[in-house]
Image (cartoon, rainbow, N blue to C red):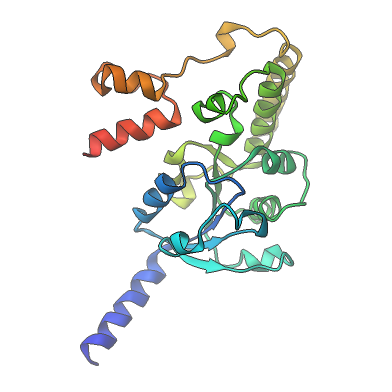
Length: 249
């Protein structure tokens, strides 16, 4: 066996040891460069990328080829399509897909793949910055001005989390497959969640300052310096990425 054959064998063995993860892209590409850079750091995973037809205009296939193999899917038999994957990630979960999942609809490829993955017990995670109207991104877009809509998206996030979908910042992608929240809530937890959601929705028209968490923005961190804040402070997505970049540098 020559050196090239040995090297090829080693690559195949290492690839077999990596967790095979399906990345399903969405129609918006906010933070795309940051997300690609983070995924490229996940050496313990082997990525396959699926770009739905509705997302091809927002994402460059050339850029995503640097992350993993690009897959095609005709939309039929999602069970077979998910065969062999140990995790499913959605870096660009949008409110439309969130609403589909929360209401049990399978209209879009993303909603169909997520719900099928959850039924199969595959650990599934999504970044929810587009689905939190209090995020810095949505504040910049002017979408944080309706308390009732904010409450509705909060309820939908709670619903999909009860189904087993892990939501959060990009830190959720740092977890091992078995650490992701693929375990649905218990009956008591679902009841508590339903009661809390009902109360929040009922009182949505009366915004209370205590219900709106105070997030520290990127501009505040840049003005005051990262040393002025602690791990207990609530930072926006952009502020968190800035702090991580500063600490890494």
